[in-house]
Image (cartoon, chains in turn blue, brown):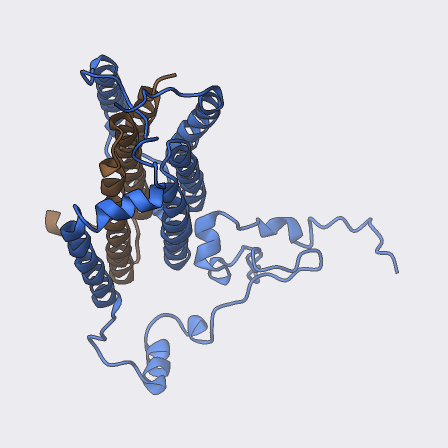
Length: 259
Length: 99
């Protein structure tokens, strides 16, 4: 007969501190605008789950959670985020009208159903802890199961890993469908398409006496900002400064520069 | 406190992940919400392993982690491929089959 499960005070305190924090981070993941912030919040949720695994006598899984999820998987996510960059998909506007209220209503119903079901379900016997199963160590107990009862799934999973690596390589491999344009063809195209002004190269960002950075559009001869002088990424991020404040008429000439 | 509280927590996290999959438009954020759902399921497996006093649940959670890692690798490769051809990571833009 195994000893019955008793949860000590420290674990209770740990749960009530970390569980609300992880729920807040998970909700924040849906509400923040930038995907990088979502990734950081998800990393926090995963770390709290690793702590919960360790608190629940699953030491090996807790370490694996940190190494695989917060280490490898989130690193991969951030890497792809850097690769893909910022675009309109980060905005939080609804594209299907009424989707958000319907989704929230359905979620409240589904979550309420799950929680109330869990609250009513009984196991038919008392819960037991893992003290007996972990008697010779958690890793040893897992290894014993993995290499005896679950050895066939283990081998299948290894085949899956190799297939996934191969699939990623095939998907990431980029094959040119048309020949690469030569420098001469590029130069000809530049003059044949678009205006002659664009053929000379796009204007650089504004460089003013009081602001010397790439986030200010240059001023055209008529005083309007030149939109082509700013990188599209900065525009998508909303990091462009209004250059009219640096126009000659608006500059406060009463300030005398110190020598 | 009973171990059921962990089950409630994982149910809530799973629901939040499901809402994220429906509501968000950035394919990478949608994918992260799928990961959140997988993590919530893992928490359930570990908790049931503790309630039952056997390590089988932890072994299954371990397999789930491996499958999730495979899924991330292939899924992100697909997202990058779509981004390369359509210059967008929005799931609304990938609608060629609709027209």
